[in-house]
Length: 282
Image 1 (cartoon, one colour):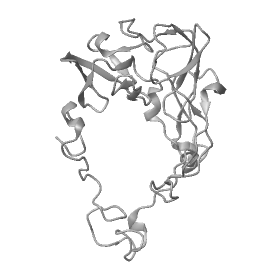
Image 2 (image 1 turned 120 degrees about the vertical axis):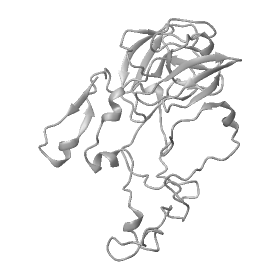
Image 3 (image 1 turned 180 degrees about the horizontal axis):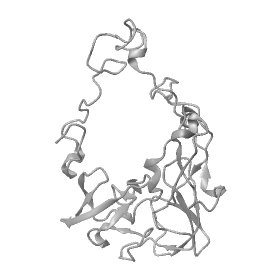
Image 4 (image 1 turned 180 degrees about the vertical axis):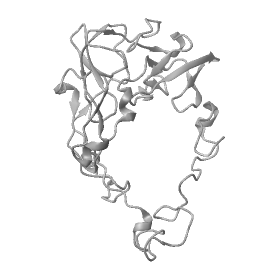
């Protein structure tokens, strides 16, 4: 697994950096584990645009990932590592002893032929791909695919290269240091997978051209100062003058860029031990 750079034969290739896909062992997905996802183009059920800059992109099949890992105490064999167009991480195809196959998020260091297991309520080997409750993990364990509520499936730490660390256990809760630096409480009965999510070089990739971004379904973003007054509060004016030097606002006039949007007294506040560092914080 590594990065691939190109000779600058064209302006596109001058900065283009992609992964070399060396870890991929299977090109086509398991058909029984895929499903169709209707694309919205950023529109709601009334047909109105509620999320700008979305639309187009390459057609995809969704890979059904086993985030619950509820095939307990049964060893599974990793038979393939595949590319998933719906996420930054790779996925691993696991076949169990009863011939059932499931996809899991591919952890760094897991290879074809390795065995993975999900324990119902006991401790198993602390190796990449094994899943168990937080109460059975030793302190300092690197984890991903973390549940917020027991039995609801993994919700946190699923993107490429991300991982959290188990810091402490007390009064039925585990203290988890998240990838953002935030330390929060998670119930000890919640499950997580050992290891760091694979494809750790993903953050260093550079698309190199606008076309690759369009393939992902992202449409162009236009600056407000480049618009007309009817389209944006920052629009209008002669040349690059714009409307003087106003406070940054959204197209609908609400302050943006650094304004606090978190509502006070949220239910989750009591579970946060240490907040992550935000832009401008000391």
